[in-house]
Image (cartoon, rainbow, N blue to C red; front, top):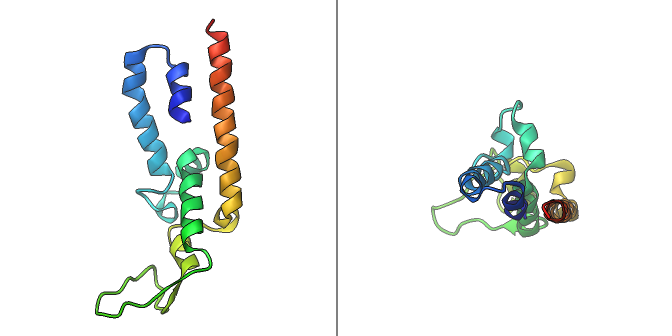
Length: 133
């Protein structure tokens, strides 16, 4: 969605091919894939709120771990998340451990934001295409 918009926004193909990957990677980093949201510096954390990747990633984690218990390991290998020593580990601890809390822990809120961003980028791309005639 964002790449489609950027490809129309930047008319020169060479510049678009140079700028699109780093911009997309930056939004992925700010979305919580590589740096957990809880570990981001407060001065740059605001960028995560405009990252399309944050909402999709949050929806994925909430969908996978909400209302589930992660069972204890039967052998010596165990997973430790945060300071929790609970066994079985509540699934909510997983996404809260990476900084997904409050309204962002709502699956439907994240899906709504992804949908709004999709409509915004498609409408913007359409407007740019109409203007380019």
